[in-house]
Amino acid sequence: MLGKTANAIFWMFRYLERAENTARLLEAGFRMALTRGGDAAGEEWRSVINTLGMETTYEAKYGTYSGPEVCDFILRDKDNPECVMAMVENARSSARLARTSITAEVWEAVNEVWMTLKAALARPVREANLNEVLYSIRREATLVRGATYGSMLRNDIFHFARAGTFVERADNTARILDVKYHLLLPSLAHVGSRLDAGQWESILRALSARRAHREVIHSGKPDASGIAELLILDARLPRSLAFCWQALSGNLAALAQLHGHESQSNAMVQDAEAALSATTIDDIFDRGLHEFLVDFISGNQAIANAIAEDYRFTR
Image 1 (spheres, rainbow, N blue to C red):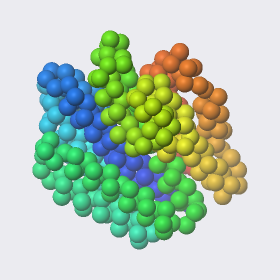
Image 2 (cartoon, rainbow, N blue to C red):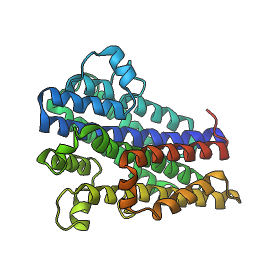
Image 3 (cartoon, rainbow, N blue to C red):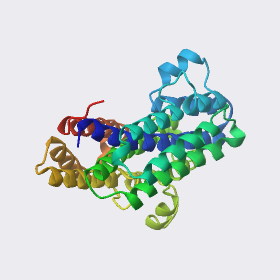
Image 4 (cartoon, rainbow, N blue to C red):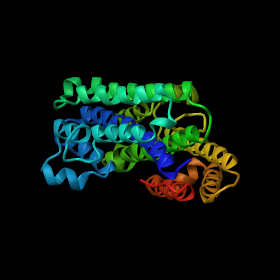
């Protein structure tokens, strides 16, 4: 496979996963803002922008943080090259570059994402229909995954697609978790409070982990340590960090087998997965959850860079 095609496949699925997870983060921020209100709600919206790394671009255009402005900026603002609509357009462009390597079902699903969101984001999104738009983004991304699973041959194209998905999902799960613990919780005085519980509940919703939390932690109470352990170390949860690196390791191993040799990215993800498996939640909290997540995001990006180098990705 040409490096250009591999790159297009890898990034097509990264962009789609990023669009979905941005919608999930925006939903979490919206719910948290509703629990606080007033000036405090503005801080919640600011934290969402900070987590997405958009503060410089946002503040160059807006002076304050309000729900309508943040939502419009993240979802559809033409001055924001990282908005959701731009991500979906990039995914569609990548799909067109790799059109001969994907099935008709996958192409049609990606094209449907683009058409649906182009219509939904043709005008500013208001709080009254925000949930509907965010649900639409998540639903359309799920349709692409379904088409991929149901129609694609399990070859190198499929494994590049899945590798892109899990690299991006790991990054976004870490960021969504960090927005709660490091940025949104105002002070230690709120730990264990109704505000604290409500924010953890929003994180579980954003990562589709509420049911898993009830089954794993039978008390059902949003305990910080238990939730962090579920989202970081429980390899049964499809959006946990452990699951993402385990799946990524499997896809890279399949690529190595198809190409006849292991590369730098294989060794990196194997070492990272082993280190994460040997880590306990107490180790993470003793070190500092924010510090752990920052290092995780950095290590995840290093693995992504190694994949691009190993398989000679070109634009």
